[in-house]
Amino acid sequence: IVIKAQEDFVNTGVISADAVGSENAGEIDIQGKNISLESGSISANAHQGNGGKVTIFAQDKATFEKEASLSATSQAGDGGFIELSAEKEVALNGGSFAAAGGTGKKNGKVFIDPENLTISSDVILDGADYEATADNTLTVNSGITIQTTATGAGNSGDISLSAKDINIEDN
Image (cartoon, rainbow, N blue to C red):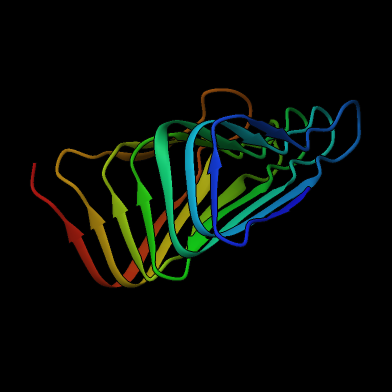
């Protein structure tokens, strides 16, 4: 699935490239000047195959809100890949990420790569590796938890934060 908005893209619905049976999940590529994931879900999940790939890239700013979810999981295969990036800014104001693999399989990965990243809501991942890389500033607001857990099959993931300047605000 490819979605290319010349200006802004707002999602409040369901976009799915899920697989059935032993097939691998598909790929979703969303591009636009400003992207707002307000609610709804974007998924590339698999049952027995591998999780898919979800790529979201904004030319200016991407926002990820409380009621939104991005997933690229597998119940029996390897976890998938999720990228949420922007040339200038990504604001994580909530939402959920999932890229877990099945028991004994590889974790998926959540990758966030803007110039500036602000995390203003807890980030709880189900069995995924989490890499947030900002070219300039990465800010984690006060009282925020970044955590990866193994709530179902598979293992908990790794967390990596990198930027020129990292600000983790005091509770």
